[in-house]
Every structure is written in structure tokens, then in C-alpha cells.
Length: 76
Image: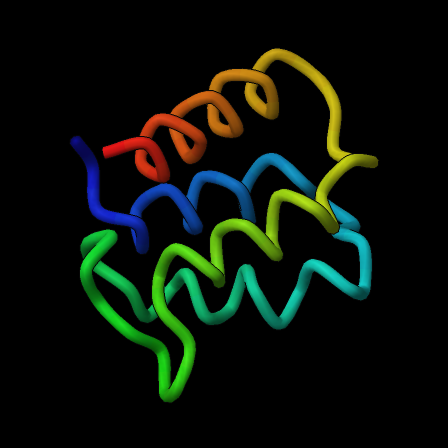
């Protein structure tokens, strides 16, 4: 499994104009390494869940692959 911060970097490279509501969660993901980490008072799980709920407008092959990877992290 990749670091969450690495996944966030890939998202930033692919999603040129992210939804404004997803940006804070994307930034938080950039500071996380594993699913067991926390970003201030938020767990990595909640950050990822909120990101996914605000990333519905991000589409394409990379989006599908990355979203599946994030969902797999949530199940781990």
C-alpha cells in the first residue's frame, strides 16, 4: 500500500480544478501516511471518507483507480 500523502500528490496532479469542498480534505491527506494517522482531531478514515464524498465530480481512469485504492484503505 502507498502512503496517503503519495495518493494525495497523484490526485493533485490529475485533478486540475478540484471541488472547493474537497480541497481541505485533499490538503489533510497530504499530511497523512497511514490509515491509522490523525490530522489534528480527525482520523485518517474520516478525512478519506469526507474527501470521497466531495470528489464525485472528479472523473476519469485515474479517478476511478485512486478512489478504489482509497476505498480499499478504508476496508483495511
